[in-house]
Length: 265
Image (tube, rainbow, N blue to C red; front, side):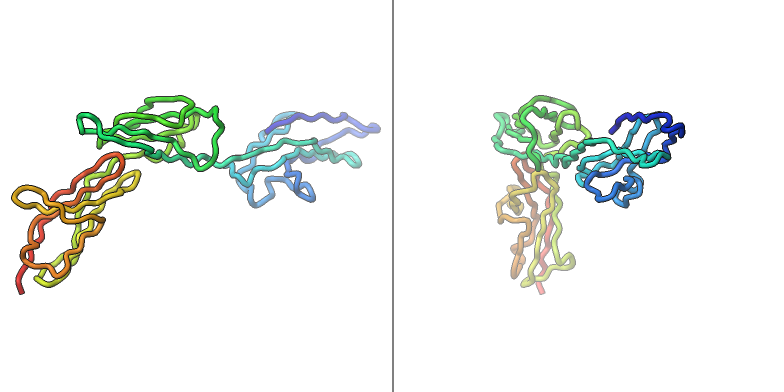
């Protein structure tokens, strides 16, 4: 923020000398130099300029929203002067953007999905804002629409940003990564005991469905759903290889098989 000021070189033959200049917030009962306020410590700078009154506030915060005024003090009697009405600064929150999947369908070749995406913000943005879309880190589209339709393969990532603020893009949306399967207890498994298998996969949007399979006659057989699959009172017929499939609206991935060997007591 900046301003300029002038003053008479002398009053009643007394040479005028500026002894102090500073900015303050007009809501303060008494003008207090911003530099001395704890909430502005290390964030305020007054770049020198003759008869200029610049102030630079770094690391802006929403709490910095206020009306700022400049004040200078001279050696003259009553020589305290304040600029009016001041400068109003409004700091808005940085949009917290997310890519929402509003609709998806399988592509004709079944190796991808056709998706309708929307760049969603935690705060209301003006209608004339423009959005930039990125696919696999490359800019692919820019326009006023917050929605975007595209085909999406399992290895793709898509993110969005407000045009001009591309450094604050949304977290990328992506299909599930290859899941990993763990089971507990991890030691020797005895008939009659209980074993819990857990499927873990990273995805955005989060995984919405986990499906468990057991290999049988070289064909996977569905055994259940959920991130955890519990085999209670396990017996020798439960021995075999298990895998899980993690799925969200952008695709699905299958884990490698994990073998469970059930021993008799």
